Length: 292
Image (cartoon, rainbow, N blue to C red; front, side, top):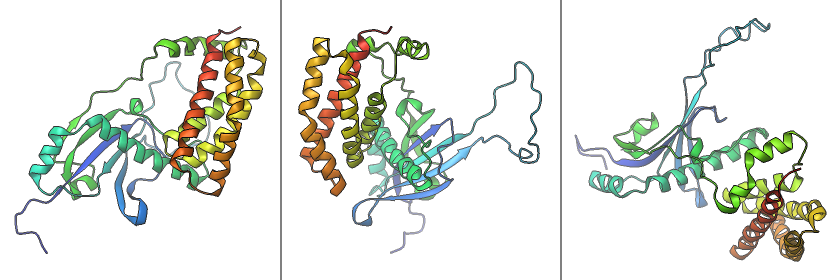
């Protein structure tokens, strides 16, 4: 049934994000589908302000530059994540704008984008494609608009959220002293353990709802932590936690085996989540003892 002449077009909700680098996927409109092929979100990707590249292919020779060159312009990736269903009326759209939790909508949009980036990394076999976080955004806009507007990254009504700084570390996290540890690592007074990188990957998979990958990653991270942290077992706290990790081998092995067979049930996901936290905790404890 066609809309009456002059009737307002339906509005959809959207979140728009901007990042100061090229995300990877080509510009365009992407439909993200969930179970049974239903549309979950529509993602519109644009690249703005890309530096002029003409002549770069022809001129391959190195050239002299001044000692204080100006900053090179960088491209900005603009991502518009559009909800799949229109509001019943413009009044409903206005009510949603008044009541919406912008940060909650931004978090969901970033989850959708990270799923897309993860699949792009898989499709291109490019391990350098990275996922994103809220503090990395240049701009976050939340609002509503007509479908055709949003397809061109425009809108009818929107607000811009304030920037979000990285979460400040307090308590035990402050004991990690990231800058001090970086200096120790670069200066050879400390060593980066394999279990640290492995558990970071497990956490990234877990936060991205890739529970099978998290379970498989955790299995290796757990064994690496048990082996690599053994030299610190003379400290009572480390010794106790190593013993706790050894006690989790059966649960982690079972989770990894289930992951090889298919999806994980909720109880198994909770086991994975719990043990990831245990490994993160013992790694933090080790670094809190100081360096060198």
